[in-house]
Image (cartoon, rainbow, N blue to C red; front, side, top):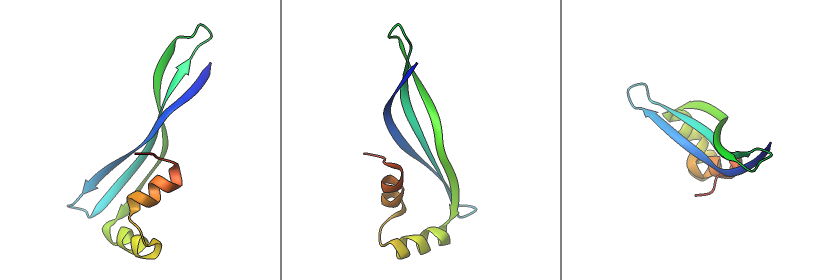
Length: 78
């Protein structure tokens, strides 16, 4: 079997009631068998939750948005 990465994605789930944001980074890839047939698979790369205040502190420290920071860290391309 051969894996061909298609792309990485970022999903964001905002919980305004609790003041948290859950970030989920996943990867979509083709799994190609010996006969050349491919199936699309998904794999979880990372998942973490931050509070609004943690995000604000991190953005001030980094000088850019959390989205930009995550995109750079995990190689996500828009």
